[in-house]
Image (cartoon, protein in one colour):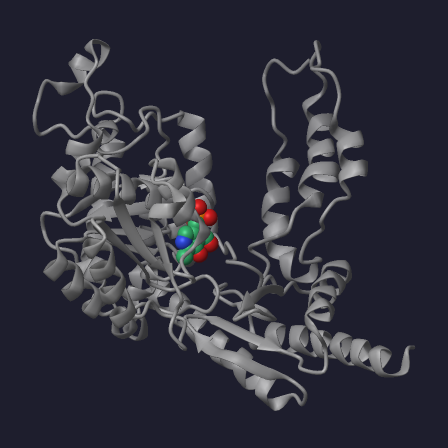
Amino acid sequence: MNPELEFSRERMREIVEHLVTLPSQRVGTKGDPAVLLKALSEPVPEQGMEFEAVLDLVEREVLANTMHVNHPRFFAYVPGPGNYVGAMADALISGYNVFAGTWISGSGPAAVELTVLEWLREMCGLPAGAGGVLVSGGTLANLTGLTVARHVKIRDRLEDATVYFSDQAHSSLEKALRTIGLPAENHRKLPSDPAYRLPVGELARSIAQDRAAGKYPFCVIASAGTTNTGAIDPLPELSTLCRREGLWLHVDGAYGAAAVIAPRGRELLAGLELADSLSLDPHKWLFQPYEIGCVLVGDREHLRNTFKVLPEYLKDTQQHSEEFNFTDYGIQLSRNFRALKLWMSIKVFGLVAFRAALERGFAQGEFTEACLRAMSGWEIVTPAQMGIVCFRYPALDDAAHLRLVQTLLEDGFALITSTILRGRTVLRTCSINPRTTEADIQASLERLDSFARRAAKFKSTGR
Ligand SMILES: Cc1ncc(COP(=O)(O)O)c(C=O)c1O
């Protein structure tokens, strides 16, 4: 027994050691389900055991079987680079077990969250009356934004209501539409244009067709940085169309909207400020540990009108109108103080460092593209855009590309994953970790190249 819940200095140092030695470690490990489940499943332990022994188990069986999404050679999906100040803020939040749902329980935290939201609002250029709420991530941010759209535009009456988005929109949006009760036959998933963007002309035609058929178009979903290629839908044109048609414009900027703090991002993301609701994930390109997402709404009161329910046991929270209760502006009541990590890390490093870190993501994408162009045998499918590059090795078929990913997984030096564009399997890198170096990119691509050559040779010679 360890009733003091003691934690040795050496153990505390291990997390620092892990971060410092990350570049020399494998990019991560995917456990074998049969082995892992056998190692970890057990009846609920009646008696406690030594903390050190549990920690050993965590290290050996649990954390050893993860992908290090903050590894400098993790180029898969959307990396989670994180930062140390954010991680320490998370420890503080849990240690103090802050309740950030109401002013009465967490007034300091509410003031910090309001400040952080104001920073994000200003960065994105939304009007002064806009406001938002921090949530677990992009999925919940999209769900929150679309729930507000439903409430404001159609008073929650879903019959015949239609929503428009492109075939490149993130899957969380379809999940959100299902969750708010909008059946699939009311979703209009339009084929994207050659640059993988939502085509405005096609959209206008689809809306007109639906109106003529007695449907009730109410919302357009745009992407500000798609997961597949980093494409940004034409936001100003979409906003003009939405205003003309009286539709809500939800912008999913979970991946890309944070880039607005860098000059290049600001230019590419022109029109972001026109969103009626906007998702932005600090746990992606603002370098925070999971979980922190944000939804901003052009008029903050829309959030309150959508979500506020006041039961008798929370009446004490509502004594002073200037006291801000986040539970009135979103789905959660009990919620953690996730604002602290973003607030502390921006205060410690300064926005100037975040801007430089973000710019590095753009540069790393371009460096990746340049390396691939310099290596023979590779085809660039979509050029570097918002830190994302898609490419293929035309000598190999789709199945062989999938096998390349498996080879990288087993090799453990770097991870690059696949996606499908216009029916073809492609490889894709997302290089937003500011601790990634050009040498990391070069070495990872050389490794990939050697695996691709070997596979192509095997295909042609059978050995
Ligand atoms: C464009 C986009 N939207 C939404 C999401 C969902 O975000 P989360 O995984 O934080 O729920 C992602 C995740 O990668 C994304 O890239």
